[in-house]
Length: 122
Image (cartoon, rainbow, N blue to C red; front, side, top):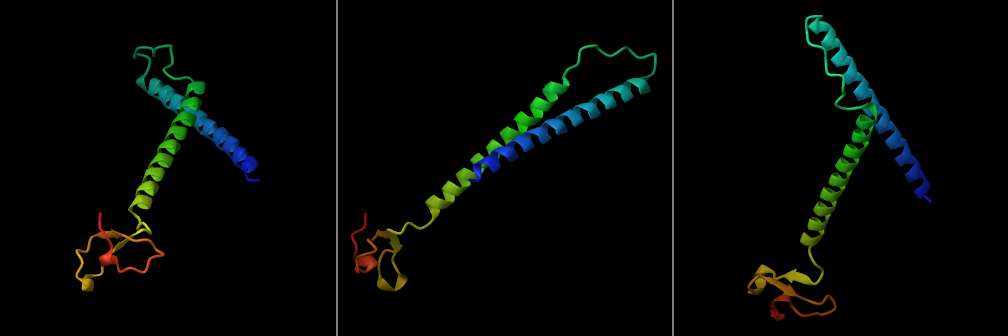
């Protein structure tokens, strides 16, 4: 049910990113033109070829943002997996200090009523 909303949101996000990339390119071109004007008539003319076109700037903004989102999602997944693997396994319990065990992890079935220190350790 939420899938169409997700896709609509993705389209709007990409359109907004393209607009931001276009705005950044226009600001950059304006700065270059101002720098050329300040340099005066005695300066060498700038090279006619542009290093980056407006379309490339928009595409780069979208692609780089997608890469950043993918990287953040990957890092979040790794952190979540590490936290899940470090969480206590329901089949593992530690020996209480007062029972004279070696206080290592023992594997105990939750249905068993054995004391954790009397269980065979691996």
